[in-house]
Image 1 (spheres, one colour):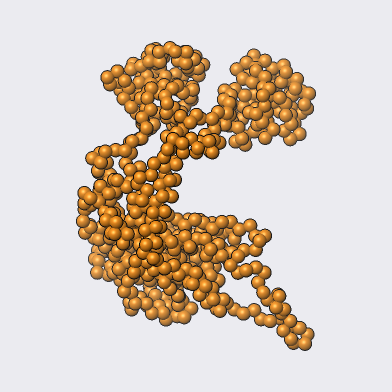
Image 2 (tube, one colour):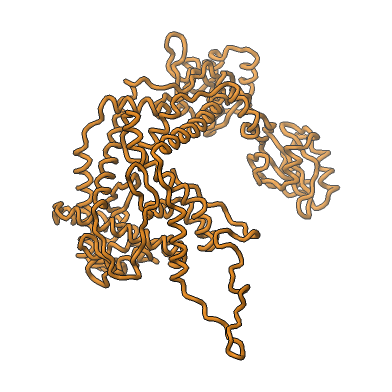
Length: 637
């Protein structure tokens, strides 16, 4: 395990090859550490041998792939490993002509050794041997990685710069990416004493001139009347939320209709902010955003060029299988716009799905394959169809879209949702339906006094008037005190009964600067809570969250309308989805390859296995009714 961690860390610093819109590591697994021509030939790729040892090492190096080698998932994983090794071999062959000097390799090896604290020669040699490597074989891997890195850079450098039409199209279809931050015009009062801050807040709420209060009392920006930004033409310059401490900024920017915050503590200081004007995020003019737009579009064009290069390598590859145990079927899972999509592309998306490995840890491989086949793979195939169809659709619609297949598909969806609007009625409906989302739970600073019997707890509760220190008074009365600190209703810091007594009960008794709860039983003892700075639960008004809701509803509507538009455009190309037939053939093939169980013999030597016992307990495609299987992970977008 230690050696494997070393290898993974060692190779993690090597070059990444961007293929099919994802970060594809050229040498991340153990498979590529073996000389492909040393060992038992499994297949050849354009004449280059890939060995059984390389394939098995690649499978062992990935925990997901190593989880099973039987059944449908085992067949999928074998397909994935073979496809990846074919791709790596094609890439290796394609960069053989790229020159990498010994000095460049030595510099990279030195960087790796220093990063892994392996500058000592013996430690370096031992680490390499533990990973099945020699210094020369590792240097060859580094050379290949640098060669790939340089070829990719050559491809990217040859990409023409984005045109004005491409920049404008990207700007028009991605308005949310080029917006100003929300800002406020306002003033603040900052003091070191909480009581003083509360007194100043009371004056401000009573109508006192806030700027005058700030000038006379604030330790920050007092000379300009507490203005958050420099004063220009009599008003403070707008500032972004980052100009304020996190807690203070969150409270101030929630006042989208203006107003005063409560006293907020941050960093040992006490803040009051008056929001004079809230400036919602707004789209930047094209000219202001052009630099960012240009960078984004140029990067998309480079990604597309690398994707096209990798796809071209696979297009005419000649694969010959030498070992029948590693021969895989890679049928066409779908066809669209005259292009065939191999099944291995769908398997790749499944294996790389972020939730897939978690699913394997929860259920048996057989059940996981049923869930994946019925839910995840259909989603993946539809996404692949959309990606493969996207360039044709964009050309037909005369859209100046750039990027990989999936980036173009996203652009088409954005085009389909470009006119989506959100009404005030929709904002209000969302607010009413999701009221709990906008509630702020009650909170306060809590001290808990615990007593052996209820009578003592009740006596203390009735006698304490807040004049003396709570801790000292409770201890004197025979209690044990625990300081619970800042507590929010339901956060688990208090026993459930005590939590309810503090934040839900209506009969708290005032005592000095705080309030006392009734005694409640906590375990075998009785507790009384003393709470200060009690803030009751509150619901943010619609006016304070309307912009947040509008943005959320808009995003949801755009996603729905965009996907609907994209699906409709794809449908006009009459794609053919062969997934069901491919899965049926795979199941038949897997079943045929599975070892047959030996029949049970009775005392007379007859087969005693009944027909009922041989039948599966449930439909092979449907989990048993009592099984509580988790939902299959969603396909990554």
